[in-house]
Image (cartoon, rainbow, N blue to C red):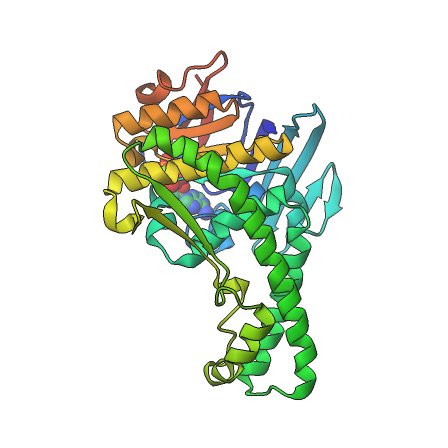
Length: 360
Ligand SMILES: Nc1ncnc2c1ncn2[C@@H]1O[C@H](COP(=O)(O)OP(=O)(O)O)[C@@H](O)[C@H]1O
Ligand SMILES: [Mg+2]
């Protein structure tokens, strides 16, 4: 899918702007503090319901205003057109609209707007804890394995309930029924992830052979409990420990996606620049795999591309972005630096200045 138009009202430093992006490459230029990241952030919000920057949603609302609105017209690969809107006020009230009809579930909007983001902080995907990699993997599982979401919602409820019982040091015979449910939802989540990783890794390996040809990469999915044991048995085994700690120590909420190069943890072997290129490949390929499996193209958002990658890496990454034929939004202080790498029949340049966006 791609955005045909994007309108922001009272979002960050934008009072009111509208753009008509290209369905391929869009380059957003402007000085520091002009609003490049904010523009990218608004698109991210449509796909995730929240920002990727720290802080509360209130910081997204333009100072002195009461609510922000992000509105977009989008076209799916089938040619079908939709309108989506996301609005949030100071009190925290959210209004979502799909084709002018109020929508309660954010997941409905997220499903329509698959977004991959690359920023200078994306290296956290490697350097951060398992949670970031779980979230990364689950984005793909969510978009490719459609029944994953209801299992995930069901599991999240059970986990919350189980943890509150454990916190109160209560766990009686009758709670075993809940553990059975916990185990069956948990096993299903793992099965979805396993299927996804199995299909996704070969596509990733191809891309990495091109981006970082001197390494042999390996991806290991860890379920979140002991190998070769059912989750039900693992729960039995860890129940006393869980009661002592006051939370659930095993389950798919503890899963990990390990990334190895030549048999070693990548963060101990690769340079920072190489890790960034690895992250670029991870982001890129999730979009490619989505397209292979479902025919849907995601939107790639790349903030601050020149700060992110050296010139050889930029060339590889930009070449792949152009070849993906997906809609891309790339920000850079000076757009002309990257425009030659991102040439398409319809590359559009937008300049951001004092809360306005002008097509160049
Ligand atoms: N809620 C807000 N209301 C008004 N201005 C804001 C708000 N949040 C951030 N800003 C300002 O918006 C400007 C744009 O920030 P940003 O998008 O990060 O710029 P860039 O990525 O181009 O460097 C900054 O000057 C920042 O101070
Ligand atoms: Mg920025």
